Image (cartoon, rainbow, N blue to C red; front, side, top):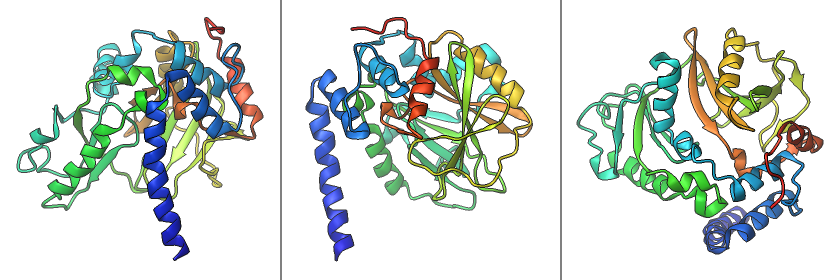
Length: 302
């Protein structure tokens, strides 16, 4: 009874919270979201911590390059132009609307694959090998929810407001472990400062460790997930991943470059300019300022 009641409260509060946040003016939206996550207001006049600088960027950074780089279809085209088609995971098909999805035709008729939307992260539908008839109705319903999600309105992540929302399909890359480690390079003005390494990112046992460039474990966690207690092996292609991440990041004061190591090659994941919307806390909290010290904003007053 108590569990059902708690779930009912959560189901009611979450939509209400989103409605309220969307209705707030941009600055008040950012202040409210930050205070709810960090239990304090951000210093927007002179941001010092990493999370403060993320929310400063949300309000004031209008770099015209960002919309293409947060578009998960367009950014792959840009990366392929710069580094070659082998650097990206191929796009099997792009759909402009849910109505265009036809599960009787390839690639949707030929699992395994993953269906994604281009304007958001962690919104993926995995259709695995051995599935003869994917549940088209359920998939379309889920995608409809994905397409309604609005980073710009909910969390003032400006660049996403410029992305024309689409659906795309990629090959599903499976491993014996059931997941690919996700290597997230925090790059400041072309220097990789830390590598946030996620295991089982889409499963129920997601864990993460943070490493420096020498693959020394850092005593910090960023976000809600616990540390991975087992030692993670140094990636065979770590040096190449660092080189690519720093090359991509050299033109930005900060960007997170997500990469994979697949079959003896480095593959591109995505670029993130507003990780966690600035709402994810560091544990221990002093690392928020250690990361913030690496980020030199061109303008820090507004």
